[in-house]
Length: 165
Image (tube, rainbow, N blue to C red; front, side, top):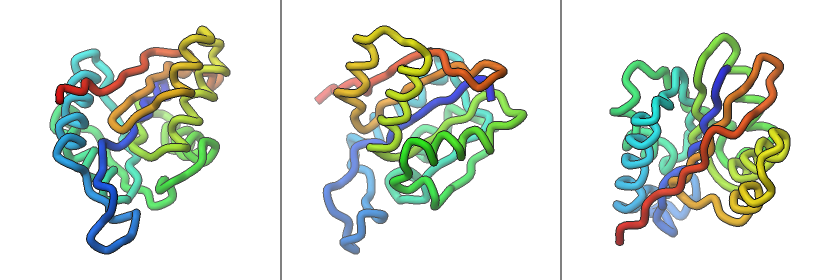
């Protein structure tokens, strides 16, 4: 894998009809922001070859809102990504990313945020950037890293949804 994109699901409803967190759907704002983030990433040439998407409803809907700008991307819905920790997310991306260019993980906090901060720290990003990501990685945010041949990350972008309310 040459690039890793960590994409947090869009703004979700507070509760699902079933009462199960796994079944929470995106709010309309979440769908709009997810589509806009997909467009922003695609406009910058950050298109996944493979998307690993948590099987939860809100992450599947996030991918559905964004996928139209990523034609040809392979998608895998992974139950193990639901509320996964940073280490598990990284391992899943590294395993699936062998021989691939860009891998996108569509998942959840706190794992995505923790992984973003870990990769920023490992890649020796500026302290202010690390602090920003540690303080705030809201729904619809994305963190992008270039990955060298030895698996070392380098910061390639931190993107937040525009709040046009």
